Length: 134
Image 1 (cartoon, rainbow, N blue to C red):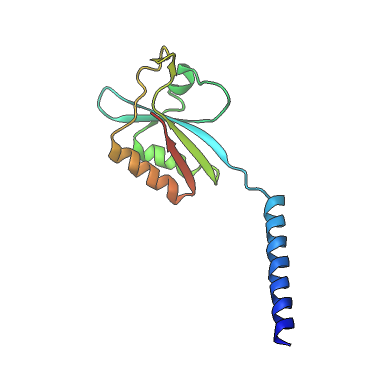
Image 2: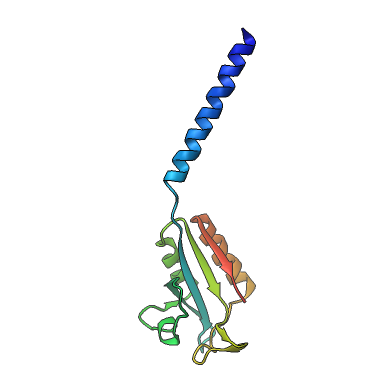
């Protein structure tokens, strides 16, 4: 009798697990990707631009568009807090063509490690993955 009960219990667990996997597969979570660009202003402060990730290289005009620029880490965090979840941010350090910066993007730079880690931790608390490129 115990053996029969054990077989029924194991079968129920297997069927339940299989159904959960099918449910998960039929409702995939869609992740949105963004590109993050950063540059230092003349006064030493940092500015940022968060743009939707596409399959093309962004132009300097798009990256440095003053209407979209975020001045300072608090503004960047505010923008991150409004991104769709789950998301991925790719922090672009340089845009290179044949090993040289693309004309007009020479100002792009990654901020000091402390700022980068602070922003990454903030993003992760909001279920946003951050990848930093060089």
